[in-house]
Image (cartoon, rainbow, N blue to C red; front, top):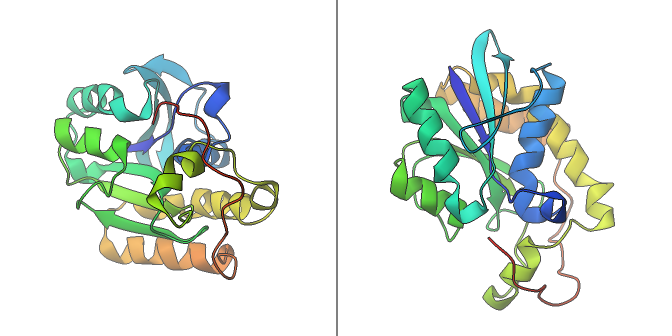
Length: 210
């Protein structure tokens, strides 16, 4: 069994935020690979399907980002999963928009969802880091992640990257390093990141759960 976790904040208010690109990626995988419908479970929503012949469960926590472990922890324990069978998809400030990288373990890098999972579940799960770029100053970060993707992103690199992640997701099923490397290289080929670094537009947004 493979557990695919998308990170985000629940509800329509946050649906288009950069911080919710993990939800978007998991939604794209569920649609592409014909998973069953979403249903309530583990303090979130789950959908069941298969990737490369492997049973897979997609999970979107129903808690705010900083309490993601309330959904992930019970799922991991109930399914009796080793952490290398857990793949968490999340936004990454330290990658340029559209770049996708896979890593196992490591620090949370200031990401509150990862920090909560690390503290309550462990660190040695796999992370699919989806680049959203950095606004250039730490004081602008909250407003950057808790704001909708700009129109040019929604019509440009974002849908291409999500489609590529969904198409190549079966390569994550094996857990083999060579397949993870192929996953990354195929996404870079199918959805090349935009040239240059995206500039921030406007100032910080109001405070919201992160």
